[in-house]
Length: 222
Image (cartoon, rainbow, N blue to C red; front, side, top):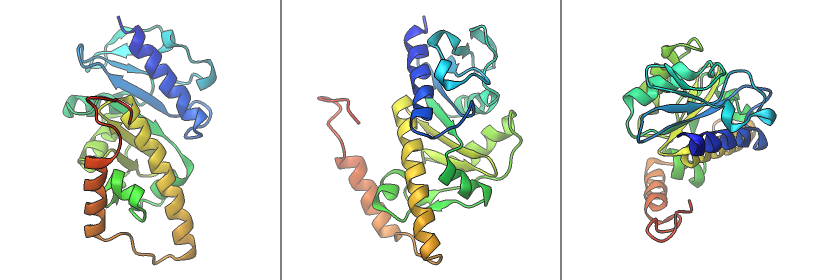
């Protein structure tokens, strides 16, 4: 029943490594099926290179395993916490991408210094408080800080992005790491650099939402 989604979630997890957003076995992608409301997620501790669609774990929103022979990701509780509270979110990506995580280590959000950042993240990506991994508290921090943005930094840990589908959540993770890298280098040379003004951010974000990409009625490409 979930074969298509298992394949897509498996491919998305492998993409994290291909894009150098994760190392070893850390990080994960999940998807919440719109029909069953069940969640497909990467298994815990399995190397990305050897992941197969049949390794993906399917759970209900209470954490009961519906399909799968492997233990689900240790971040499952946080994913489920978010899905139970946000009907608009259908995919979550978790990474430890280096530049973004360097901000999380310092407990700093990432202001929008570029128009690309403003397009995606408005005035910037917030950083949450510290939370113990593997518990609902991580999900609570995500809910408390993400608002209507597609990304949040988890203090001393890493990155969580979210979207209406897998591609949206992945795109946010990629652009967040790009944003963090540019912010790192720019402020390294000019520590007091001012981010974009609120007016410019609003102009960029509105233009991006209304003009970027193809019309969904004729082309689904993002």
